[in-house]
Image (cartoon, rainbow, N blue to C red):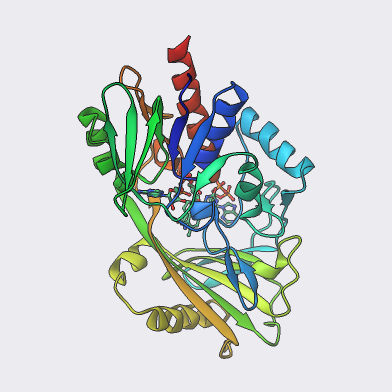
Length: 328
Ligand code: FAD
Ligand code: NAI
């Protein structure tokens, strides 16, 4: 009997590993503590439509990822987004157009991981707390005390701080993950009855609490009735205000937004805030993935490469490659 491979985390890294392993003829079993796929590429459903509170868009530079994104586009899951871009430095707002091809999921960011889920066995709402080896095989324990397994191998595809305890069976890898700092980001969305009087659709911000501003409705495939915006605070501000209430975060970032636009921003008809505790790795690593091939334990995620969607996808692919290589 060939046992399945367990994958913890149904974000883009876990799903990339799942796709590659399935292609090679293996059966995989995914677990995610969330109620849907996507992790930091998920979208929040709300009264004013689905809002991309995490990843805003992605670029594709590695040939393998370029080809993958083309498949997503062919499947209708992704489209290019060409926003009217601005930048704001020391309070000076200016247009900042460029030629970069940027992609988004359609009709929402989560459409991509939703598409990639197809045909996989997934346990949602299942937080894994322990990965342990029985006599010869791997088992998982979840937060409710349930046991899952046996599995031939385990791929851990979660942010580094969450991977560390799950890697306890292989202390070397646990130590590597424990040394990766990940920084928080406060994200808010605001929806206005009347469209704001600005041509801006995306803005890279410096020297401000804010780091990024996007007109969610300007992305392809969105049919939101209101003028919806997503604002990201930078990591320094987010760290300083980590325990602020959601209402206070919304008020403060709305004030920063008004300063950026040099105009009053009306009270929104709808607002929401989300605190990403592990939004991005503080540094850059080139590990690809972590592997203890003798034991059959692997770790991947954006923190093993660039802290971007592309890096996460490539890291999942690398974890699968290293796992398959060891089977040969
Ligand atoms: P994740 O997406 O974090 O997936 C990990 C999954 O594991 C999650 O679904 C989580 O629920 C699950 N999980 C965690 N612990 C457990 C457990 N114990 N048991 C079960 N499940 C568990 N990248 C870009 O390229 N462009 C951008 O514009 C961009 N903007 C961003 C903006 C924000 C605010 C944030 C937060 C990120 C942004 N990123 C962006 C980064 C990008 O979203 C990530 O690099 C990428 O989505 C990471 O994918 P991942 O699979 O490695 O991790
Ligand atoms: P990219 O090439 O569009 O952007 C990379 C960086 O270049 C930007 O952050 C910005 O500083 C600068 N830049 C790009 N185009 C610009 C323009 N027209 N005008 C002014 N500055 C410009 O995309 P890439 O390399 O794929 O990066 C993805 C994006 O995801 C980045 O913006 C990054 O900051 C963001 N990100 C955000 C995270 C978060 O937690 N908020 C986590 C990970 C990535």
